[in-house]
Image (tube, rainbow, N blue to C red; front, side, top):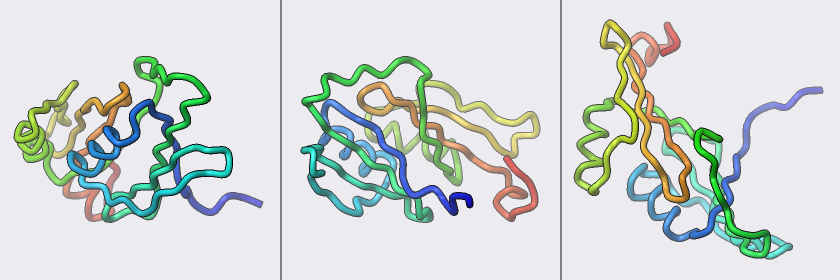
Length: 137
């Protein structure tokens, strides 16, 4: 027996609405659903336009404050252009926290932006070959 696919991953937060706004407005994720769990957690599920996997943002104050350690975890999303995404960030008063870093041939790369609460988000620009399914990135 084995698992068949990733369904979702969860990030617990102190300020749910601030993070939902970031993931929707900065990254362009779609809010799929929102509800309260049986134990009282406020949950918001989001997804990227071309992905099936969900991100669950969770606010559960009775478990104490969230303190994200540096380099603990991150989410990674593909973008068509790191340069264009960097300009998008600038229009929102944001900037990359690291990068962009490109492959020596300039065909692909990655950068990071900090989400609320201290979580990192990696943006990956894949090479044209990778986008066509002929290489990784």
